[in-house]
Length: 193
Image (tube, rainbow, N blue to C red):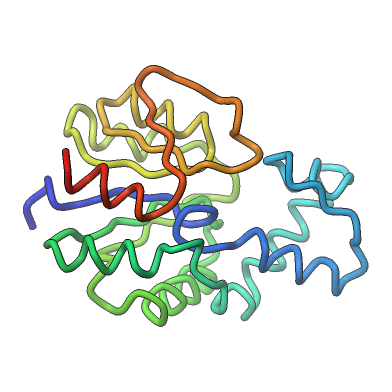
């Protein structure tokens, strides 16, 4: 594959709407308070970090992770880029449970087809993406992320870093990171580059 036709992307909050699906699940488990202005689940739910990690791990290892809906207009945007010869490599901090990775792959294939994602790299839960992104240093690959610190890591490694707009990153700016609102915006940026 032409490496210039490979797009690196985070999954949750970029390709799949993990947050809304997770919040529906935690509400069924008695957690009613959800504040979407925060990035960290512990802050969103007003709980200690250990409890949040336990809930995330339970959710990510369950069959619920196989049915996370697409984020915004990701289905259309990804299809357009695939039609233009692009493929995607997922780099996600879903966790290192092999079962969760298989369920994530099924979820992505069910929504985007078997051709869109050529590989899925699952990192330990909430781990930094520095080491993984350094493998693409100065390649100019596209990198799409919603966590500001990971977007900067991509930019610092010489990637074309795009930050998906969310309430938790609305005030973030960086000279090497471009903010995008949705997949129509991403398609426009990439195809007009």
